[in-house]
Length: 134
Image 1 (cartoon, helix red, strand yellow):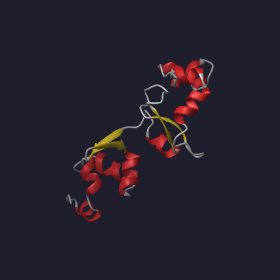
Image 2 (cartoon, one colour):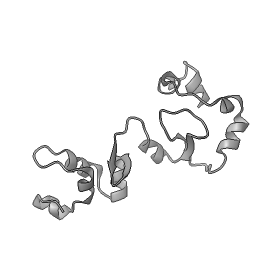
Image 3 (tube, rainbow, N blue to C red):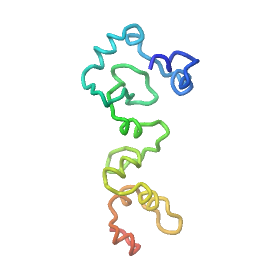
Image 4 (cartoon, one colour):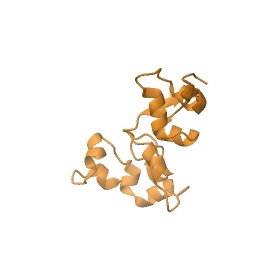
């Protein structure tokens, strides 16, 4: 965390320090302070995650997360909103048990009516095969 945010020699510097991502002063000065702030909730299979991928490493912006959660929070993900909730298409796919490609086909098909995400998540297979909604 400290190396990739503060050293231009770090292989990932361009994605962290090079974008202006910093480590808060408290953590830069003291590993014990980092431990004190982040000890709650730590488990061996978790990694440090920034809630806001454009934000700094600081107690208010960091949590422990699984690799899957981190992957769903990448800054290059395209987040979609449905039912008052925003998440990437992979997360919608998992939540509704619908393959990502099926959702994409429903939403981005060129020869038929394009569906909204909410429609794509709730349309039945039967209705899709008939070419009607719900």
